[in-house]
Image 1 (tube, rainbow, N blue to C red):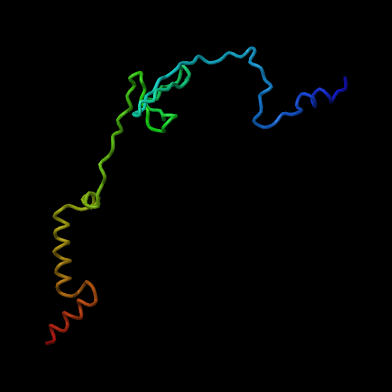
Image 2 (cartoon, helix red, strand yellow; image 1 turned 90 degrees about the vertical axis):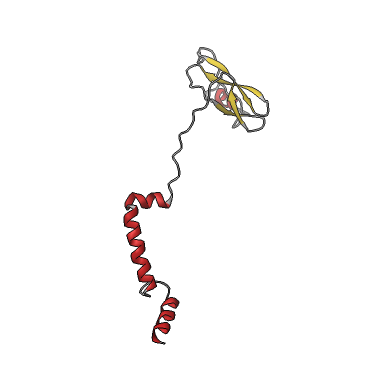
Length: 131
């Protein structure tokens, strides 16, 4: 037998995604378990997992894509959500309500006196004062 013909004959016709040429002799598989799930549509299915795996409480249903809960009674963890911080909350982190009231009074006086604010308000105040 020639040296190069064995390898050529073995791989002839092999393609990507084709079958594996390895055999399973001498391989010890990990211990497995079947985990059951049921979705809101009533679809029951099982997922094969390692015995050592942390079993998730929720799995996506392969038929409809909805969330399926474990039939073993494992409950999903409740997520503790922080309440949304408003602009007011962030403002109160920097200043007290008393400080804010003082700033408001000061700004209102400047606005009413025509020292700040939109330009069209300043012109209107000047006309009233001159007349």
